[in-house]
Image (cartoon, rainbow, N blue to C red; front, side):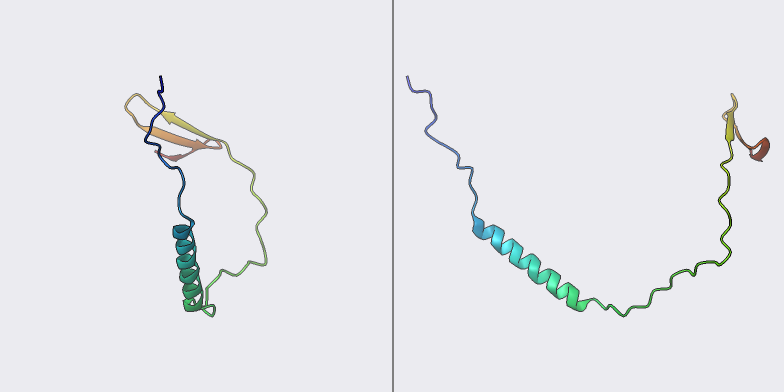
Length: 81
């Protein structure tokens, strides 16, 4: 008894389609690099001379009431209701 299938699926694909895709991507990136303008001015923020020292982390406490109201306490002071 021969239970093997006579219709076998080929699991290969052509390299021609892959080379076409790579060629099109190469052309696309060459054209995009030529169209880009490297002289575009960019406004960057200037660094401040007197940089503030790093702040110590502050512990925050959030209290949610039964009425779905919340209060945020930071360092013992209420900030937001």
